[in-house]
Length: 479
Image (cartoon, rainbow, N blue to C red; front, side, top):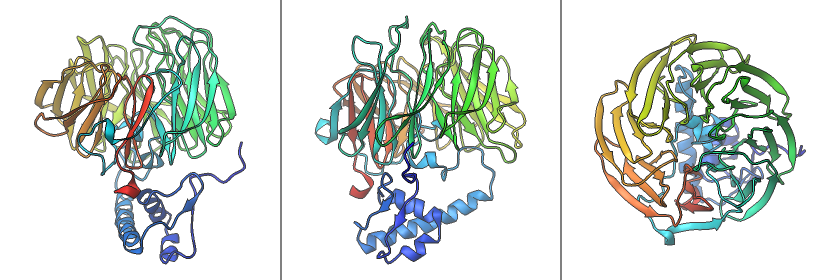
């Protein structure tokens, strides 16, 4: 472990005219740090901003602080925007898996000449990038090998800072899969990486500074006819992983993020591997809940602190769960299952206000299978692998429109500036309007296909194709 101070903290230089005012509120500090692009890695809030611009930022921070105080008095149905995961892209599909990003300077359409950078990765893969401050992390699988490589890059210029390679044994998988399918997760000090195989599986923490191994947890064999794809998440001071497989002895695991020591382990039966990544639900009262969906269990809520079952809707998930569940700020839980493009189901549930039970609200047939749906301003968007996109009202399942976008898709959509972005397996980034009428905004060639999901951080979008990584958009300091 590094003895350096956590990078989540920072200081304000005393020669800053607003230092005294700002230092009185941690929330204002966090907002200002986010808005002016502070150096989270080294813990310094630089004075590279003119006083008028800084004053505007301070005013925005004060307004945001008022908003935070108002939210504190209201029930938290989903991950609050003040949660650390909302400031950075720390897990698959961003804050609590919602897919909602912030990049005001991202153009609706762009070309290769607008890329900030495009770099080749040391191998292929389907995992999606995660970011903390100015560091980006992604996993790759070198061609012709069964190795997994964790890559740390400078998010500003795309330069590789370090790599860490793990040898693993090969196994049979579906043609579309890859040994680098699971996305990492990250916090202020460490990046967390999971792999699985029929012979051995593991969960590893690497130090952000130089990639040295902090701890490693051996998980045993993972039996899955389609390969593994689930990703870890960080919640509070824990790393949580859903280790679900085709045969018994599946489990949901929580370990201490600093030491890797087990906090709790909730075991359950497994009959059909679930690549889905869990999410967090915060009820009005009571403990936070980890939401998991599997073919065997249906939908479950596990006490995040005790590791015990709180509620369950059995038999809800009729097929394998590939897409990941997510929660909206209205308290609806969306979970998708399917096998192939024909047999797909979207299940929507609502927990009780106290979080002790839940009930099914509605079901959508033929929604999607692999791409995780997304909800934007009360509109639900389902994206099938074959390009059919359905827009419905999230509250009542009323269909608004349904159209087809030519291409095939295994990544998931994200939303920036009321636009949905998704990468196709043929090599295009598709942008459509996130509104009540279908509008194809752009089809942007990326030079290579992708099965990954875009990441958004620091005002930029990061696009992982099969063997390359692309940065586009102006950073916060450039807007």
